Amino acid sequence: MDIRLNDILQMKKAHPCGESRWLVLRVGADFRLRCLGCGHEIMTPRLKAEKNIRRILREDTGKEGK
Image 1 (cartoon, helix red, strand yellow):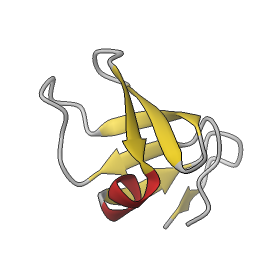
Image 2 (image 1 turned 120 degrees about the horizontal axis):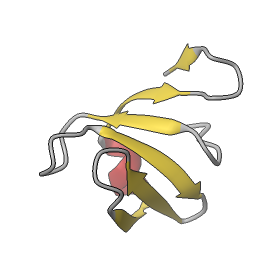
Image 3 (image 1 turned 90 degrees about the vertical axis):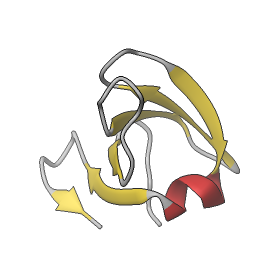
Image 4 (image 1 turned 45 degrees about the vertical axis):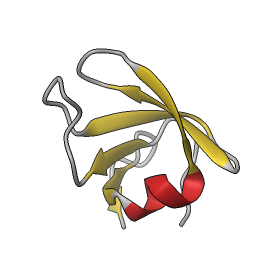
């Protein structure tokens, strides 16, 4: 999957605050993500994150990717 810095990931499950969108802060073997609802940051393995992504929203192009 082509995931870049500052992409917004819409996940299959919502965060406990109710938001399902996350901002990508770090890309590599692990992702650092920030919840767009409450600002909570997590570090999660790439495989786990990629499995739970529903949609990738790109800020730079304004288009959606999958």
